[in-house]
Image 1 (cartoon, rainbow, N blue to C red):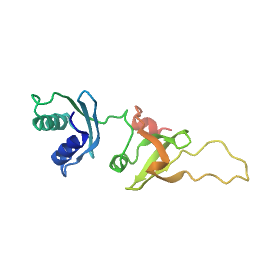
Image 2 (tube, rainbow, N blue to C red; image 1 turned 90 degrees about the vertical axis):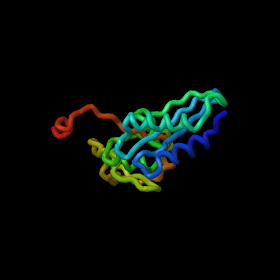
Image 3 (cartoon, rainbow, N blue to C red; image 1 turned 180 degrees about the vertical axis):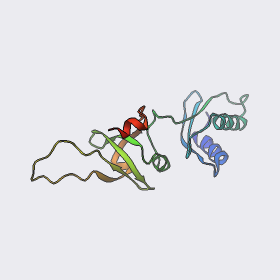
Image 4 (cartoon, rainbow, N blue to C red; image 1 turned 120 degrees about the vertical axis):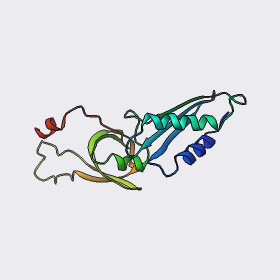
Length: 162
């Protein structure tokens, strides 16, 4: 079986200091290899093709057969590393906190240890003796179970008319 660590080594070496980076590698027991990459400015399909050819050139199919899939992470996969959070600052995210509650917020900052969100201000007025909750919250990455970027099909003009 092809080792996941070997694939990671090959990918990291190939991507080097480029704006592309490795997010995840999965290797099944039947040698189905899935490599997921991301980029600071997106991932062109030509980069996936180039990386796929590079990985294939490092193995001998006569020695061990495998199936290889190289793709960008896409919007359906959760954010998993600080670099992905940093590139998505300014976007709306949905996240599941440690209590299992799903929340929506705007990602306003990210560093190597934490990310900062701004929650929407509720329209309901709370009791007068309850202080308002601060809409800006700084969280460590391990304070959430899953974070996904929310895809919006609204035009900027629609957002401005709100």
